[in-house]
Image (cartoon, rainbow over all chains, first blue to last red; front, side, top):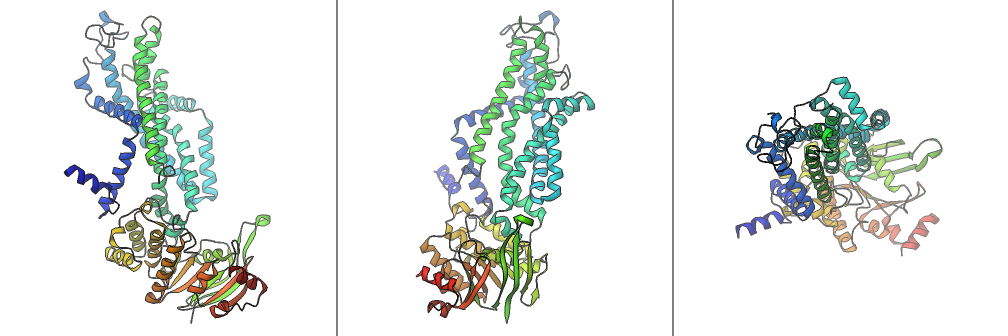
Length: 302
Length: 246
């Protein structure tokens, strides 16, 4: 009974306080999201990934760095090594579990840097217009004109190999599409009546951009970021594969594929297992992004 | 006493060959406490005059005087405490992610009011929306309710001059009457001056004391409502407009 009334309280059309209105809007979004089965699958996989990364020392059956040359390239399901061992006899399952931490670290950092830079550049460019718009958009064009991985390679080559530099390189190449989206949205929003109305209250540009334009741009950016996450994970893995991202013996998934490549014909699981992990996580982000688009996209809703 | 005076107002968009003259040499005066109508067909420049007064159409020449003070290019915040506008489409004039409380609260905060909570409550009562609407989002409101919120927002700074840009044309006929009556009541209570744009002569006849007829960016005739009701227009275009609306 208490649950029933809580549900009614959340679904009311007449919220009684600011907090109530916010919670009610959140709950309705959650209901819309929950009805999308595939998106829930994606969310569950990602939640599982976060839990695995957090509990890595408890879950991993072996130390991911301990080598055992006597038991190298053990096949799937061999005793004590469910997913086999790699060329140095390290347990692949343990390395995958610890690798989840690196993947999440990369994803989180890129998700914090690229969309924020893109949002800033795009909304300022779209709202201010004039020569500011021209300068910012030409810079964006220059970054867009480079192939992503090649530009990332150039940055890593200049800054040195390593996860942090790989993240910076990926972020630097990932922000221009966000700037474009944010600018396009801003252009449609800035001429709308509700922006005119707040201008008539004497609001300045900073307030209009941060309080009125950002809330409307952010939802489409979130959707775009989750859909791009697969690409970012793949780019990080690609850099790792080329030896320019995470350095051995770090259990980064892309670097693990790169190591397993030498034995791919005789010992296929060494490269396949991290490949499957990348595939599953990328897929989960895509499913989540699709579901979020249904919930957050202001054009689809209402 | 004149609240708003417009002399030889020209408004244009674009430059060079793309230049469109939306308003040409328009002049009229609106007295304090008066309700003045601007009528004409779509594209005759009625709304553009309102946008030029508020600064939303930045390219204009001529002289606009509000309460004896000429308007500069950049308008100080004090100007917006005096002049406010209600937009045509209530579905487009409210931010889709801001609740009624946020819309009114932010407006009051921008105008430097301290007792924001009490004022939000009073504004909602003024426009005939109860407290139960305070924390709703625009998608939880009907068109008429949205327009009431927009009117409350325009009233928040306690302006003297209210510019109404076809405030009922996007609403159902039954709701139109409610909003028009609300506007008429508010004008009496707060002693407001209205400048109202409409293409509906019956609305103007109901709401206004005098009106100007516009055609192709020019004011062709200024007459009072008695003349409108008696169908006594002098200019052929206004006669045509009157005939068409019977």
